[in-house]
Length: 403
Ligand SMILES: *Cc1c(COP(=O)(O)O)cnc(C)c1O
Image 1 (cartoon, rainbow, N blue to C red):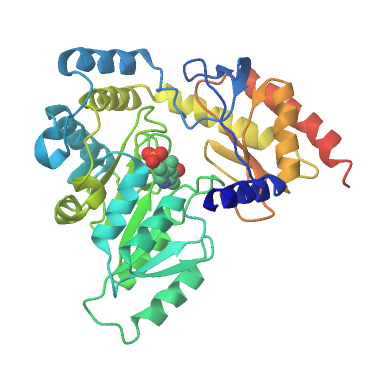
Image 2: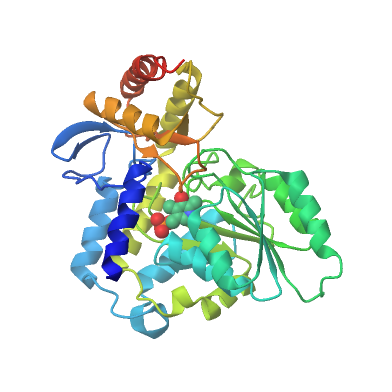
């Protein structure tokens, strides 16, 4: 029977310590959470600015919910495009430094839609090896040639671009595609160098700023502000940049958007199948996202506090066996190595009431299983201090046996 195969496949996953299980959340997003019936200090969410349960965000969502109900009823192109969606798109465009923005249902849907709209047969997508899964899926679905360069390796990318430029038809399009902040490593892509290559080889540069939006830059405008590529409202970003970010992480809600040159965004709207053939998100979510943007723009203290915690964690944690790669973002990975050790580490932390997820292949390369600590402005310095103490103790107990 075909169903028997699945049982065997599941056993294989379990053998490799790759079987995943869900935890049941019984509280709102916060530093302290009720998870599987236990109070834990959570270092596991992407709610970097603590906006998922911010009173202004909740209030704005509820007001819109009362007025407009829940469902959008149809796709954006039929009757699902609400005035609140329109207002949010205008706000996102201004905030991210582009003339136009377009909402998507999720980041996953956005990346599939963007890449399939912008590239097709005969075109070439150059992608960082550590890009998020949905960028890879979008590239495959586009049917373009799909070339992956070693992580952040500008020299290799240049060689690949030079190679592909030989004898290519001059109508073929080139896209350089990268996470702006790598989701399992927390490091930032060398965007100015990528942009230079995009200029040199006449390519588009697609940036996925899921983890930078709201967090990076003095005003939280993301990776482009971080690199001074959108200095002021008067200076729009480079038109070859196609900027994508999600609303489910620092913005505390759900959904995503793409921003860029007017014609590029209009084309994505006309062509992206994940846009055209999918129901619009509830208008109340757009009201919540507008409120989240308000807080991001008015309350710099949240970002400043998060930055303090990031510096404190990365400066203070001293590891003997595991590795803490350099990261200036809220994502702080502790590379343990084997799946088994990563799981045991996470479990030992859990016994001390800290929730830090173990990340295993295929999410990360084989042999680089890790703990993914994510910091939030909801944490206080003592939370981070306690976590550092626990990690230091457990590391010696658990990995010291190996050495
Ligand atoms: C989370 C994430 C996505 C997917 O966004 P969703 O809105 O959760 O579907 C895309 N890209 C990156 C880099 C992400 O971290």
